[in-house]
Amino acid sequence: MKPSRNNSRSTDTITIYHHTLNLGNGEWTLWASDKGLIRVSFPQDEGQLPASWLKMYAPVYELLEDAGRFEQLGVITLLERYFAGEPVDFSSVELDLWGTPFQQEVWRGLLTIPHGETASYKQLAERIGRPLAVRAVGAANGQNPVPVIVPCHRVIGANGTLTGFRGGLQMKQVLLQLEGILNVKAAGHERFAF
Image 1 (cartoon, one colour):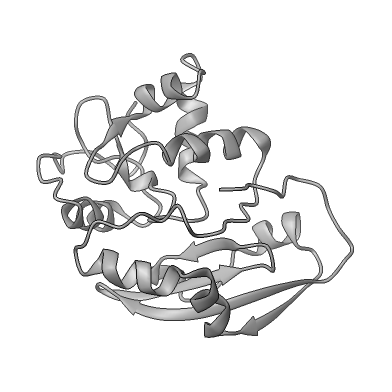
Image 2 (image 1 turned 180 degrees about the vertical axis):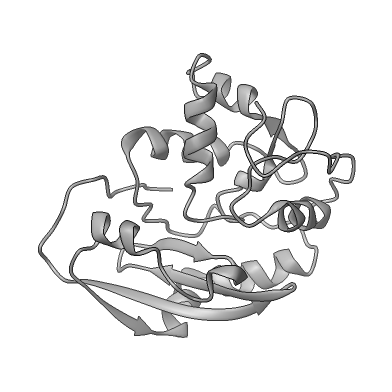
């Protein structure tokens, strides 16, 4: 993973490639720059990018539908295998993550949580050397633009429950079950429980 874009604005036109796939129980939209994958949209996002996110990181852009860009990145086959229940290593996918330096630090930490395992927000904070930043780590986790590939769904509450997932707790539970994680309680809530 090479997070490369922070809050700096550019007046250059950025080409944003997109392609929608039917995976699992819905349509997921993939988004990429020339540098790598920038975002994965959940089915409920209806193939749209958040306007505020675009304004911050790509104020001047053009959209281009291009399945070939994502075939080139190798992400389509990997996601299809993942949603078929196979253990998948996404480390070969080039990423161009747009976020603050702190968010990028948290997202790199997420990549250290292996397939089929979970970590609490506190454990993630400790893993990245920020043991007192549990809430900030939770907030950065919630801003992860590339769910599944950067596995924010593997972070659960300290009490072992599902918590705070932008795609919804039901989707989080489905993703964990695809990885064979069946012991997480669904008693959590949509907000973070650290």
